Image (cartoon, rainbow, N blue to C red; front, side):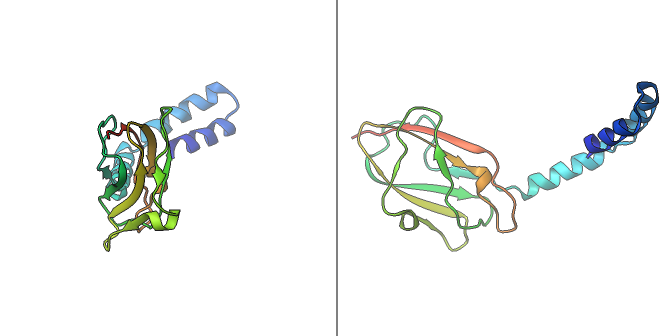
Length: 151
């Protein structure tokens, strides 16, 4: 918002001596209160989420595993997993993509069925910026999860 206005002023005033007084008046007039209010509004609308596997977990049971992602707000029905940051295996979906995930009635809990091999390092990401609330806001940052299975 301020950046656009300043860029416009810079283009309008080609000489620095003309530009600086206008720039200083613009910055001084900019309302930090409005910016803080806009950031607070965005934070209120953004969903948060947790997962039943934490980064660094070990001895997760191999075989069929239910990955559960719980959101703070109702979400649109998508699945958004990506590669992790380590060289671990990407978890195998138990069935086809559409049969491997489900949402609860309130659209706040997503369950993803995975088939995990024993004694394996897995690495994946939950792509929070691809999950959207029912009213169009994101679920925030990417969550990277690296874990190992036991027997």
